[in-house]
Image (cartoon, rainbow, N blue to C red; front, side, top):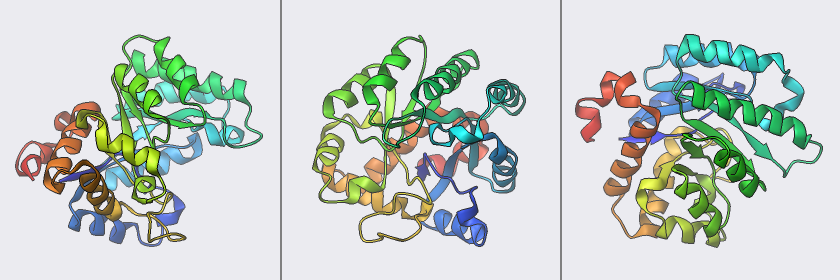
Length: 266
């Protein structure tokens, strides 16, 4: 069994073939997907998509790249939705200092409150960080008891160590399949496996050899192959470890009976 810890399969990019994409993923062994939200307007569709497809698990949050879609009141709406729906995580949230024109103070405002919600509801948090790993780490340090994942990690070995020391996991996806991503590949090769999750970030971040194509959860198998090769481990071993990590972080064993029996041993 594989778990895609970060998939936006609810978005419009999959409207024409979502059923087939989910089927391809399951055929490839990707039995579960964590589906993080982007903004409030997308929450209802995300909920519907996850309810319609067993193995899709919703997370709700406000993404830092979509500040124009957010309003301060949406944070209260988010708290109410989390209390009602009991998602697997808070997110996607975080800081993005790569994109020009994104107000940093506004990003901090939304991010800090979502970290507080994760603590209040005892949920993991799914974090987006670009050119902001030290700032994200500083925010995490200020709130005791947080756990979660920094998805699509692209920082340094020291930044990885700092996040892992706080109990956070690192999401590894398409970028690791590129030979030129030497720093990331070195980190993945040496980091203790209990800190790793696999992801696609579908429909974004196409893998090496698929440049310009829409990414999809079935291609998590290629991420697995690369990670196993870099670590000198079997694909089965990496799949089992990263799936256990996801089950533990997101509480999937308590939410999905399909993880309690044969699926848990695949």
